[in-house]
Image (cartoon, rainbow over all chains, first blue to last red; front, top):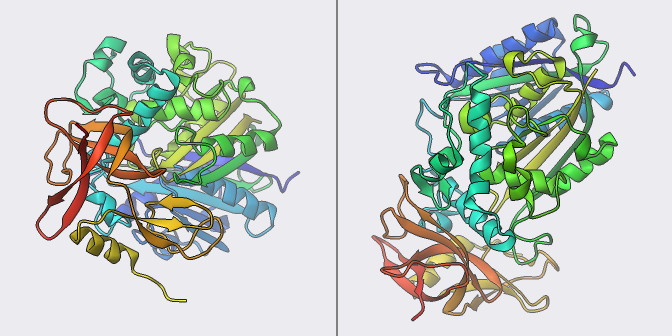
Length: 382
Length: 124
């Protein structure tokens, strides 16, 4: 029992713009916050799980800055879902006895460095030089996915607006949110068109930021058993679009990842008290929820109607305001975990969801229209 | 077993205004993924001429972008066109009539600075 890994620390840097700093310092701040939150001696950290673009920040440099000598060092690049995948790796490493205290950490200066993202072109040295000539921005890739979803399932523009309306409502309860003005469905639909059918409020913000989570053996010294959060199940899948793809264009990798995660946890999506779902765009939320089994495939649009995801809704989702209203430094998987941990600990303040005992974090990294990875975690209050 | 330089070959074929795809005859599969081997049987794929027309599978009108399409400033249309059973990421150029899913499109070529690039226009 004491070998079973639990989440003992979580920290989110509250700043959304971090000018005039180096990326490594963002990682340091995120890591320090999680270590202090966990109440552990930093010297006991023997697992280091870094989220970043490969080559951007070598894991050795981070180890040096943190003063740790990990038995298990991991630098994984699975886009926005990396941190959820890192939790799965950390849990497996701890269960195998290969490390005891794992730090999962992410940082980014996407906004300050003006890194091309939602409306930018392909980054320099992109794998697919052939595709880049056509200007497929990230938002247009999700736009193409959204239009196909509407075509196949009858998803409406109003339904596409719903997660954005809910995110603004949640943002009222989070002082670190940056898009705080409430919007009606009509206002979401009438906003600037970024890439059809996605308007600006349906696309996430672009910020700097960072965060960290510590997964450890339950018996590690200094931690509070009452604040520990259990990892009941995890799942991961990478898919791509090709003539040989099995599930079809409009089904995401979350379909497979959620099956594994809920299967291991032995619980059903319908039992979740809340969710955190990757909301790079509103279509990501609709697709991830239906693929994860919260409703039948194709009915995600109807599922999110009527304020279901908002404050007081039947499935409170992204109470921190998510990427749509609060933070998205490029790969926001770590924040899905951090907010779920805050909620399950009962430490979410004004936005605390009632009786939050069981929740799922559903990540999507990469682009839904083509190559992407989903990581899913099912977490529970101790 | 030689490692091929498929990306370079793709651009060379485009210079000759030939839209090509990769094909496995054994599995009867076409793909625009520039891979060497068939993902089903691991046999060698061969270059194969693609049809010069297809159907719009999905699209997005890019309203705001720091990028451009192939010789197209924003707003431009990014689309997946289904050609011989395979999806090809491209631009659909249009003038008065806006394209939709299911519309038939025809191959066209645009000459950029140092490259000839395939894109599509609505079939008449």
